[in-house]
Image 1: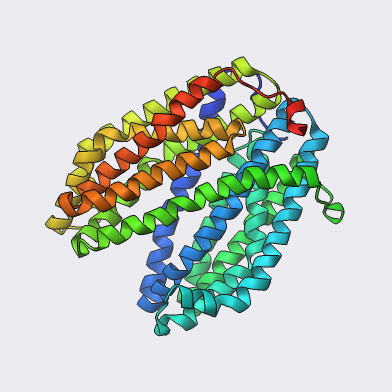
Image 2: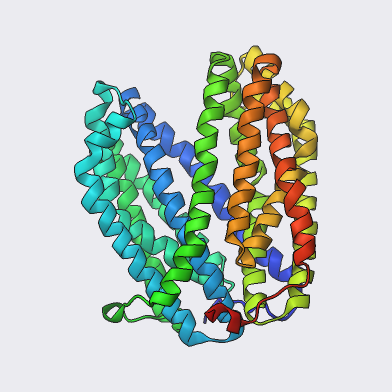
Amino acid sequence: MSTARDMTGGDILRHLVRFSVPLMLGNLFQLSYNMVDTVVIGRFAGSTALAAVGTCDQVMNLLILGVSGVCIGASVLMGNFYGAGDEKKLRRELETTLALGLLFALAVMAVGIPSTGAIFALMRVRPQMLGEASVYLRVIFAGMPFTCLYNIYAAALRSIGDSGTPVRFLVISCALNGALDVILVVGAGLGVLGAALATVIAQAVSSALCILYVNRRVPLLRVGWWGLRIDRALAGRTLSYGGMTALQQCSQPIGNLVIQGSVNALGVSAAAAFSAVRKIEDIGLLPGRSIATAITAFIAQNRGAGKGERVERGFRRGMSLEFAAGAAVCLAVLVLRRPLMTLFTRDGDIVEKGVRYFDVIGFCYWLPCITNGMQGYFRGMGRMTVTLFGTLSQISVRVLATLLLVPAMDIPGVGLACVLGWCAMLSWEVPLRRRLAGEVWSVDRLDD
């Protein structure tokens, strides 16, 4: 039986909660797994291997963010067509996205595998890391088709209201990756090669599970592989939506590199404290990000169905969930900030720096939840340019404020810079959202 969820009717709050919860649990599992994965590589493959994998992660993250950005754009279009009941265009959009994704993967393999040396030269990788880093990255490049397939099918399932199935396959993939790390890195002694093979095999399994599930349980999304073709009109809209989202996704980590440099200049204690608070924030902000994804899917479906009044009610319900999630994070961080820091270190200086950071930002975690909700709304409405400039305004103000505040305030200056960045985004997105209130495009508009 298909797990698709038509969100154009029924209780709005229930739809949003049921869509959000699997995403939260899946992302929490992945964060936990990533920590274990790092421990296995660091303890059993050595510090050079750990540094090599960490260096490759920067390249991998940019590729994955780019792929997921295009998939988000495609999922909005698929959600529109699903809400409008246009199954033919839904499948044609999926075919187009699959064809584009596989072409991209082949291009990455063709260009990336022979160019690893040039990539690492630009990154100024140390000679002792070069061999292991090159092996790892070449294997990851070879596995790009699996990365694209999983992300595309996960986006398609979410577009029809099924957020749980991709998460279940993600959990299986993460668990398999961890087991293979132990077998290949620890047991077989393959080092970074074993870690890379574990990652690619796990990705291949997750993509295969998605394809098998869709073919057996979701005929709505079943496509003929030999007949894949690119619909030029849909490809243009997909790349327009997805390109903006990909730029938005990639701009955040680039800005974070500048911020990390400012923190590193404060010394080892500040860098260690910042690393700890970022991990705490990653977990604390998961609910807000998951709710934002639910808002996008809900609005995309109802926009496609031409239900403007339901779009507005969905937005309001979603924002109430975002505020509640943000308030809960504020309370948890302010009450537990010291115990949370001691989970990462017993160094009193590092703990104190982290506590001072949370003293500044702890009252304001409702702000990123609200910004996530706003971005989710604009994505669902197809306003990808707004989401791009929203992120650019936030990260630009945050980077500039960090450079100005950190020398005078130490690590609490980073917290204040975050608050200023969130406020900068909301200062123009909130008025824009009010002007767009009640707007909804009919599915006919999607053909323009």
